Image (tube, rainbow over all chains, first blue to last red; front, side, top):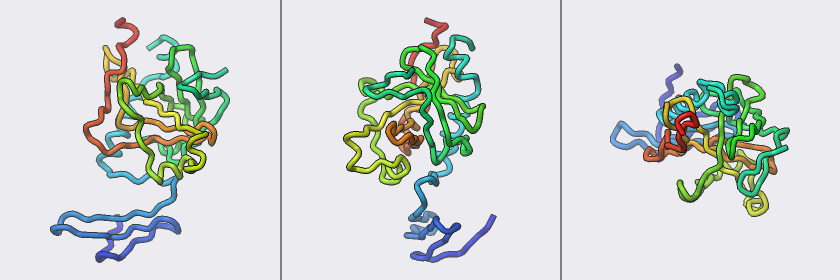
Length: 72
Length: 145
């Protein structure tokens, strides 16, 4: 994993189209980012994304079409 | 043949592009719909990842309240302009989970699907409000009725 040191107002560029700016650091333990990314890039808090990912997989663990047809 | 949902209709042959994929299925960008004559439930099948198929049902305002609001980024992803908003309403759908509970088919209220029918684009809108149900009891399992 890459680790970079940045100050408030400084930015990180990922590829040509993603820009992350450090906006604020509160109490030495909480960092506020501004993220500029194309519409096709999903940006979420990891813990929230992980919950939805898990639930999507759970909803996909059986055969949806077979269930709709009345099977299991 | 299509399935009427709200006042719009999704044609089975219509392909929807999900630019962001779905959480856990990031490579699934193209989806089609298959209606099996089961009320207002429809199967959303990935055309890229065959194992990715989900059962969807329309958002029910009577049970869940108003439909969610789209952020500017989400509108951009759906190719939804403010000018087009009136003519091209968004169809809000819930992902059903019939496999997690023996007695209930549950609905994921925390991450509904928004479909812009005219543009053929979709997005799963992940909401950050932790009080929203991941497994809202939507309806009893058909086998228990």
